[in-house]
Image (tube, rainbow, N blue to C red; front, top):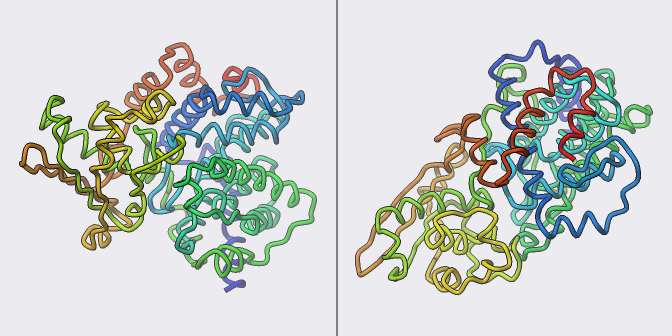
Length: 445
């Protein structure tokens, strides 16, 4: 298995080295630009939260060229990468990929952008590095099946972060492969219950991924990294199982960045189909009937069935609770960041309705994974039952995908700041054409 993993990693390393922005299909370029637009905007939304502002205030900020997005300063690569990564994932709004079962770009985007700003990299090289981050990360996600109870943050995605940073450093194929292999040997073994418990260490796992990917690329640049098939032992063996063939399957033909999903709810992606169904049911029964709901039954697949807690003591825990998300959708008519802010987190009507929500695993919905993350929601009000089933959340590439106008509208709602939304849009669309991305990225500090 190690030999197969090493060979596949070397093939990936050669592919990353030969990845040039002007040879990337136009549709793929546009999709990456859309993901970048969403990711930059979501990072700034996260940066404006009280928890993130407190973290920034407690973190020493040394001089540097790498911007802390929404933070009012530029600093060292490592500090910017860490703080931006935690802001990006803080509200569970970051773009993701159901076939990788996680968030490929978030594992490395903050590190790549911070390094690009420090180096004064050209936009075409930065865009290629971001695409490498996504594609390599998604392939490692597809190749890995983590043990039950594991959270995907900070594990298989480190390899993608390493690939992006190595591409930005201009390393040759063997060195890029060594960086990817080293990144695969630096996973976090995070437990999913940490997220359910509301422990922000889950956000730090993603920050650690970015720094580990950066370190792996620098080790490769120094010539002290090797490609030995480490993923077969770390991601496979210790943390789960690993299939090296998935690393190179349809390499150069399938672009995983086209298969991801955007998130319109500030909550774990596994809760989104239930939220979408709840919002449709709210329209059917009318707001006046919400207070008379007797029960809500959510049938879902095995990946989501454990998100059934009806009590929470912290924002993150609420974002991983289907009962909280469904109750918030029914009462507030939306599941934006505001519903989990302190003044609403323990809203008595939400808590009361959440207590009436039960979550059940359904075998027929399990059978539709991974192409679909289907969910059924059935509520009873005034003795009458109504049911809605959705195959995937709105925003999934295969089900009501979001275009640029819709992403901009989403960011406008989240930020309530048209000037910042325009700036984010200008940075995302203008980045590939820059001779030096640092001044452009620093606009978002």
